[in-house]
Image (cartoon, rainbow, N blue to C red; front, side, top):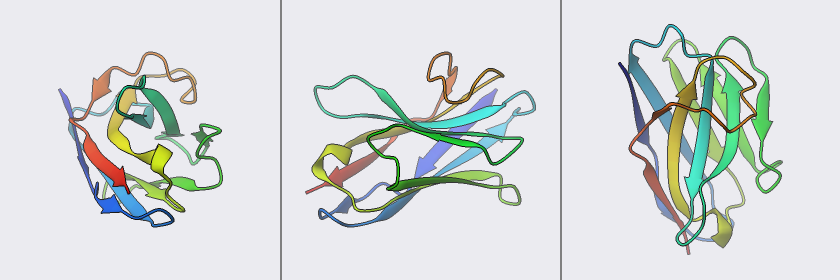
Length: 122
């Protein structure tokens, strides 16, 4: 069983910055992709960033490209998402997710999810 725990969600003013972290535990041997998704109130869930666990190749949604940075810490075994120049549209519940194989930038078939952490830009 793979467990994902998110942290770092806070309330920030427009233009502010924050860093979200995802810490996996348990059986993660077959996890090939780590991704971040978000869901704003009244909106559908959308993928925002993803990274291969075996390398540094990253993927970003157009709405966050240039403002969000996804990184992997192989020592701590964590995946962090840095959010810069936050705007109101970044408000939502952010979820860490994982999947086996495939293209990490393909938002489909992510099978394991964290409980989420709230980001509020106001």
